Length: 114
Image (cartoon, rainbow, N blue to C red; front, side, top):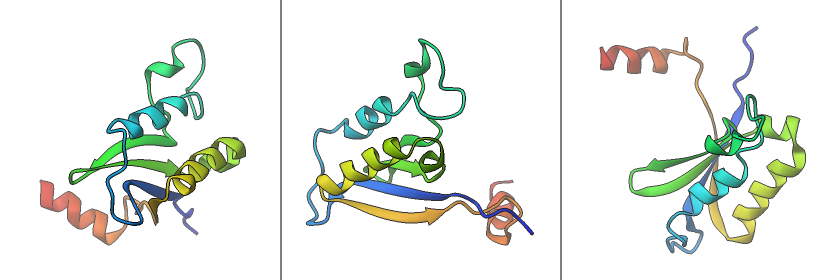
């Protein structure tokens, strides 16, 4: 049986009332604070790269942070910190999962880019 892909939480830079969240670099700041958590995040230069588990991104013109549920397994307090940040700031959070590479939709996307 195939392993279930981890859940990802998309924390969007918009409040539930529809206002754009400020400051404009909030996603980079949050991901920067969490850079010490995740595989390969060791040593004095760990802050120079984002964690694989908490990373900033853009969806259209909206800043977001993608939070990987695997962070909960390695550091529950860090996972709770990010989720509480979203809750405290009334940000929209959407739960999703990454499709495996062998999934038909992924294969169709791959063919579309060839």
